[in-house]
Length: 83
Image (cartoon, rainbow, N blue to C red; front, side, top):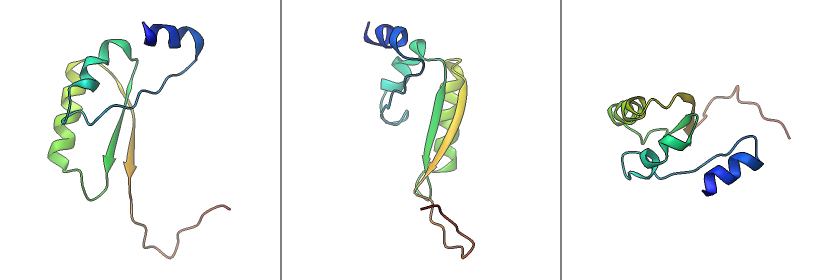
C-alpha cells in the first residue's frame, strides 16, 4: 500500500534494497517496480556474480534501466572536476 500511495504522489520513486544475491528483498519488490538500476562496486563485485544478479532480474521481467559503478579509483592526470 505504501508503494501505491507513493506512485500516486510522486513521478519517480527510488527504492534502495540490499544486494540481490544477499537478500530476497529486491526480488520481492519486482512486481511493484518499472525498472532496476544495478549497482556494482569497482574491484569488489566479481563479474560472474554480477551476471547472476542480472540473470535473476531478467527472470522477473524487470527491465534494467541503468548501472552504477561505485568506488572507481581514478589515477589519471586527465581527471577534471567542477567546483
